[in-house]
Every structure is written in C-alpha cells, then in structure tokens.
Image 1: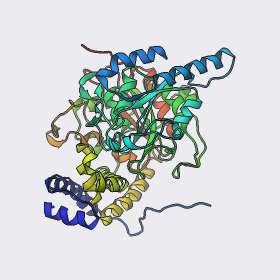
Image 2: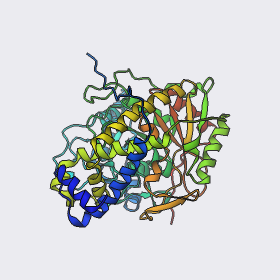
Image 3: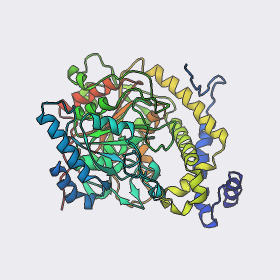
Image 4: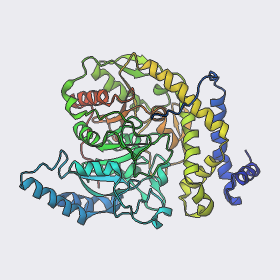
Amino acid sequence: MSESDVEQCAALVGLPIEPESRAAVAEILTGLLTAARLLMEFPLPGDVEPAPIFRP
Amino acid sequence: MAAALDRIAKRDPTLNCFTTLLGDRALAEAERIDRVIAGGGDAGPLAGVPFAVKNLFDVAGVTTLAGSRIYRDNPPAGRDATAVAALRRAGAVLVGCANMDEFAFGFTTENTHYGPTRNPHDPTRIAGGSSGGSAAAVAAGLVALSLGSDTNGSIRVPAALCGVFGLKPTYGRVSRAGVVLFAGSLDHVGPFARSVRDLAVAFDAMQGPDPLDPVCAERPAEPCAATLERGIAGLRIGIAGDHFGELADPDALQALERAARALGASRRVVFPEANRARFAAMLITSSEGAQAHLDNLRRRAADFDPRTRDRFRAGALIPASHYLHAQRFRAWFKARVREIFREVDVVLTPATPFPAPKIGAPATTRVADVEVPMRGHLGVFTQPWSFIGLPALSAPIADPGALPLGVQLVAAPFMEESLFRVAARLEQDGVVAAPVASARP
C-alpha cells in the first residue's frame, strides 16, 4: 500500500488526506489489510451469514 | 460526599481522571438523599455512593465530549444516558465525567487534548483505556463506582492495569442509549468497582430492556448481587489455552494460574481461531469507527487527536468485502464458541499480557521474544470475547507485585451470574482484591 494508493482510495470515498499524512495512513492500512488477508484465507462455509434478526 | 470531593481535589491534579467535575450538583444531590433517609424513605441500594462516568455518556446539562475537541462545540445533553439515570435512581451520586481515549479508539487514555490519565499505582504509567479515567478514579478511591464502555477491551484492560474490578456485560444486556458509540456492532457499557458486591449492585441497577437502544435485549433483568453467596458448586471452570497462554509476560500467566489453582480448575479449553477473531474485530472496529466519524474526518481532520486521526482514516479505506467477511467470520466463531460453552461454564484467561506500560512508551515491545505493538497488544486477550458479545469480568489479582494484573472470567451470553459467583469466591479466598491505590511520593 503506497502513498499514491492511499490518495486514490481516499478519493473514492471523498476523504481528503493531506500529502504529509499519507505515509502514516498507508502504514496503518497495510497492517489492516495484512490482518484481512489472514482472515480471508480462512475458508468459511457458504451458508455462514451475519443473520440480522427481526421480530414483530 | 464532601470527603470524596476533597480526595478528588487532592489527587486528581496529578492523576487527571476527570474532565468535568460536578461538585455543587453532587453536594446538593447528597443532601437530598440525606433528607430522604432522615424522613424514613428508601434512597436506593446505592444511596449516596459517589460515581463517575466516562465522558461519552450523556449527562443532562453537560456537553458529551467523547474525549474529543470536536464535540466541545456541541450543546449540553438534554437528558442522562439510560445507564446514568439508572445508577442515579438507585441512589448513586454523579460527581463528574472521566477522561478517555478520543472517541474510545485506544487502550491507553493518552489523550492529546485533555492530557493522559495517570495510573494511581505509578503515575508515570498509563491507566489503560479507553475508559482510563473511570478505572483510575475507582482505583485511587476518588469514587466507589464508575461507568465505562468496552468495544475490544476498554473496560477490562484499564480495570486490569489499575487493579479494580470491571464488567463488560453481554452485548445488549445494558442499554447504550445516550452513549456516543464507537463501533456500534461491538459496543457495550459496564461498571468498575473495588468489590464484587459493588460491581454486582451497579450492574443490577442498570441491566434490562430499553426501547431507546435498538440492540438492547428484551430478556428481563437477572439480578446477580443476591447470588454472590451461592458459591461455585456445579460450575465447570476451565482455562483458555493456546492463544490465551501465548505472547504474555510470565507474571500475567502466573496470576492466571494462581486464580485457577484457587478454583481447582485445571481443564484447558481451546477456542479455535481466536487470533483470527481478533483480526476480524480490528477490521470491524476500524470500519465502523471510521464510518461514524467520516463527516468530521472530511471537514475537521485537524481537530482530531493525532493519536486517532490516521487510524480512523485508514479504517475508512477498508474494502467492504473485508468488512463483510469479518462479519461472516464472526457468525462462524460465535457458533464454535457456543458449542464449547456447552461443556464449560466459566473460562479463565489473563486480562492483559503485561502490566501498565509507561506513558509515552515506544510503539512496540517484546513479549516471549516476539515484537508486538505496545498499545494494540493490550487487547490480545479481551478482543476475541467482545467480538461475539460474551460477558467478561476483569478481576484484580491480590498482591501482584509492583503493578496490578487482572484475570479475565468469561461465560456464555447472559450468564453474568456465573462470572459473579466465581469472582466472589476468588475475593472471599483473598485471591483477588482491589485496595485503594495509595499515593506515592
């Protein structure tokens, strides 16, 4: 995750991030995406869903 | 009440537990309660007990800061949060609002706007967070009770580091109405105290349905204070293995073993994929937290605490697919853990992997020869449980050495009673205790 990646992703969500902060955001996001990769590697059964519950 | 306010005046300039003090209101309320008692009335189970609330709880007439500079511009709250109102109905007297990490995003209460809260056992160290002011105020004897919130460990971590009892109830057990949320699908509120009985009485005063909180359970209150004498007969108590016995200082593991021995617990219980549960909790927290503050991140980024700003921004950039996978993993993990809790009633873990670090400590530390983030790692043993809403109680080990350490008790959803019975036994046997932290020169 580069500073340029952060700039482009932030533009997609309409979040201005000043150039001097992009390296710090990139480092934190890299950590989160590493955690996400380890999570996504775990094979979940197809029928698992978060299941919101509604009652009358 | 005057004595409590005197203690605050003496010690809080050093400890920095409070961001707002309500001394005059507290004295007037205490006088009102005195009149009720003098007139033969029932002033409630917590009559005259001074308490504090993390400054993300609404208090009528006070601006709810949530540890931020941005919310300083908001008008005062029009009414008390449901949990605050419940404690006041029980007779407790609110004396002030307590410091926290900005928007509850942290485990340290090193707040740049309001200064760090200092640990009453060693003022050069953190109190833990994000409910650090609430925990430290109880530890120092400034108040007998306080309220905090817990998304990943923000009650249990500061309770352990400050040497007090802290309860994170089951998700939905205590109303969050009138509380600034951090990550709504993970947020809980709960009490701190210096005895199991005080903790139970406070919990009992607050638990139960509330239509003002959309996730508050409809399950009726199940009071715990009356069950403390029941003992632990019939309760199956285990020790969480694998993840919960790794990456911790020997002292933290020894504290756990001490509690386990006292309870006669030796069975190791393995919870699969606890580390991935932690990763999933991080992703959900970061995504939901960023979403909650996205508008201010766009308009007023410079007013955020530098300790939270870039973490919120990174959270805003997590792909939706990752967030949703984390939520699906949550359903899977919840089902596996539910199966395990059919075989065991209460599980023990260390509350934190090490005692309170120094304020301003480096970003990383070494534990069991592995480099870990100093601050984030504080939640390594608390996050997997809040992730699936289980009730968990942090109890301070008696005579831990130089700094407090906690043991965490975990049960199946809505089984707080089991936690309280085990904590009461440990307290009766002198294994856990929360004496007032005395001032040091």
